Length: 214
Image (cartoon, rainbow, N blue to C red; front, top):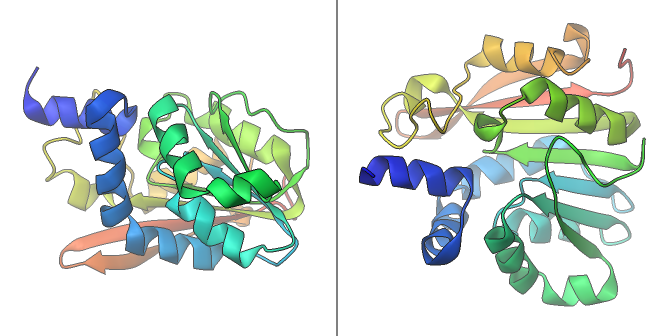
């Protein structure tokens, strides 16, 4: 298997020793995108928050600091990432401030309308059925809640050999908005803006309001 393809597979579903290395790389590479996405979430102290595709758990910890009276859920499909997230949030896990789960994105283990804020950063590329995942996010989001999705713009990712079509689905602003609409949100509830990450790398932040979800 070519090295670039192997990297793409690990990013899609980290596993084993290479998965642990991938998790460490994620913590370094995703710092600015995650910080921008968390800021857009507008987390309040008592919110119940979900990090969908929580990876090594750095964003779970960051959001837990913003919701000291709430609960932060981290969910991932990778057992390797859940193990790393558990190590990064030991104390909060023991107190119940943080909860972690391994599950499919298309079948979230949460009740209807129980989540105030949902973050999905650098993970939408790997959703094989985007509409099904977004519909699940919409199901568990409370009325008046908010979803924030970060994705690096397709114009940048097309230059990255590991982001091939067999592992990554790429998005520009229009296709990101359309993907969110496929899960049942009205286009009037979706706002997508560009952000500069570094150098020639631009990202996209989509903010979805559940206030008028239809």
